[in-house]
Amino acid sequence: MLKPTVIAMIVTIVGAGMAFFAFPFSRSQNVDVVDTAQDSLSKVKPQLVADAVLDNGPAVPREEIRSFPAGSPEAVVASYADASTWQERLPFVKRTPDIEEKMARHYGHNIIHFDYVKIAGPGKANVPIGHISEVHVIHDSKNLFGQPVSSTTTYYLEKTADGHAVFWEPSVGWLPIGWSPLNASRPTETTELQLRCKLTHNYSGISTKAAVKHSHYELEVQPDNGSHHTPLVAYVAKDSPAGKRIFQVLSDGREHPMVLGVQFRDVIEEDCAWVRSLASDRAYVYDDEMRRRFTSPIEVAQPTAVASLEAAPFEMSDISARWVINRDVLGGQTLIVPEVRLRVANASSTPISSLRIKAVFVLKRGDGEGEILYEDTQFVVSAGDRPLDAGYSKTVISRAEKGYRITGDNTASIAAIISGTEAEVEIYYDTDHGFTKLQTIPVVRKLSE
Image (cartoon, rainbow, N blue to C red; front, side, top):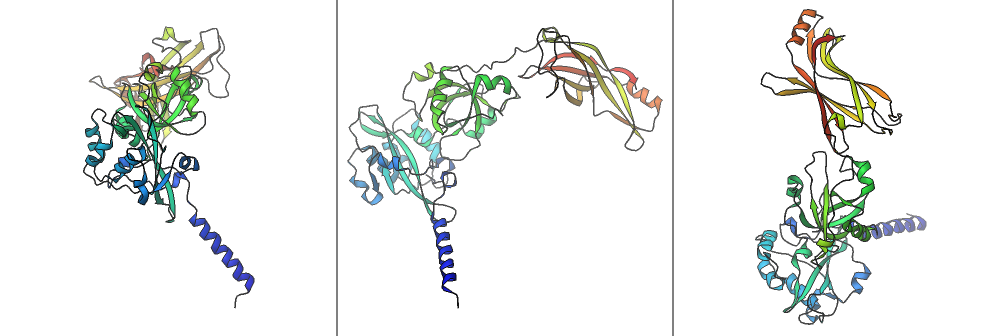
């Protein structure tokens, strides 16, 4: 027979375990509530129901929903939520351009299942025309352990001459282009999108970290439709009106919905977007003039591209490119590869703290096409090394990894290969926003030990 103390310990442990599994998870572990049967684009925006949300207005159980005043924002949302097709929802929606086409694309032929338990709203319908009211629809879902957990969807309703209407696009996070197609196509024209935004400081989307870090804020943005997406890194100029306002809103460290005009640049090294304009610091456009006042340049404060060797802040001399051999490679084989040597000197009056020279070895073909044998970036000044002071010079040697392999050490065969092979080395200088070609050097058809 178990002792009373052992029984008490078991009861305590079981009780604690039940309390743990009954506790709802945080927002990141909520189960998304789907607004349609199959369309993943129609997920609601999950978040924990805070007391402040419930205090904004009455929270009414579904069975008492008809107690809302007729025509109130809450009553309109209740009728909208009860509809089972997008056509039935249409009468409760603000008539914006192409709204039927947007809703048809969004919902398709799915039957809409919209389960909710409470609606919390402003509790008043007598507001001026054009006023935007927020209504929070509270849902019940379950966490991974089957315990109930709450989430909420915010609907925006605009007061029109005919009454309150659901402002559909910001309520569902409508995007004119899918998130994957946007990232794949990288449009260079400005695209206006409703996005969830937050400040970050990794500066991982661009190679010009040093220049951008001091001149631009970094944002992490993704669609504001409740679904999980891979965020996109975006940059906005700190001294621009858009950058100042965005920083002001996001400085609390939380995510906020905004309507941004984003643009990609045709720069292959960049894995980011640039904020061209701020159309709204909320989920919807409430001031048509804001995008005009809050337009941001996307130019990056960085050095001017070097178009020629004469424009570079350094000098190259003693340039040579020829074939060299490595003996006794892979058990008796000989590897013949091209090599380039050059001397770099600081030609300016100020020290150069960062300088990169890239050598690309190209094996030429008879038709003029080239096969890249090797591409090597030489760090003339590496981390911890001394800067290139005025007049300081350094020799850079780069050797290709690919070439010709022959068995043994047949000098005649090596000479024949080299004399019949055309190759060249392209020299590039890193301008912090891409490498610029400075010079093309033919590889001398001569063997050097």
